Every structure is written in structure tokens, then in C-alpha cells.
Image (cartoon, rainbow, N blue to C red; front, top):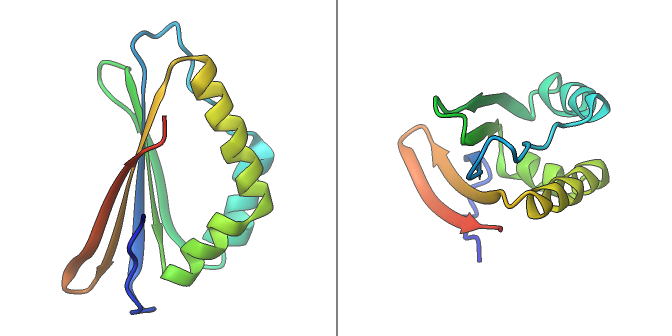
Length: 122
């Protein structure tokens, strides 16, 4: 269970890491249409403050860090039907390629982290 406080002004940072055992297993590539959807619906409106992606030096892990402006913005993103379809597709590809997914959700305000939850999806 993910605990989120009632302080609606708090921000959310979601760090998702995809880990593979070999480069022969390919990481999921987001469709360009989904990138555009994130850009117009979330980044341009300020609902997502930043979204960064990087691959580890050994190329065995890919991490995506997304910062949401508020809990409501994060909840809206989680309920977005387009995002849910991409998530389902990504999980399928990860299962097929033996890629593990772990997620760290941090709720924070100007004073620092309020809550942190770690979950392994696969």
C-alpha cells in the first residue's frame, strides 16, 4: 500500500528503475505519441516539473525520474487511460524480456521528504 498524506501542496517524485541481466534483453521504448502526450498534457501545463531518463554505466539499468507538482497531478497521471495503456505494454515487454521493475515514490515539501515507498512490480 502506498501512503500519501493529506497535504495537497506536497510534490511527488517517482523513480522507476528497469534492471536487466544482459543487453540482449531490450528496454521498452516509449511511443513518440506518448512522449508528445506527456509534453502537452503534463510538462507544458506544469503538472510534471521534470522527467529525466538515464542508463547506468554498465547499461544494465535504466532509470526514469519524474517530479509531479502536486499529489493531484500525480493521481491524474496514474488515472490517465493513455498512460495506463503504455504502462500495460511496458510491463508486458519487461515480463517477456526478464526485466525487473522497481519504483520508489517519494512525497516531499520544502522541508524535505515526508513519505517514501518502494515497490517491486516484476
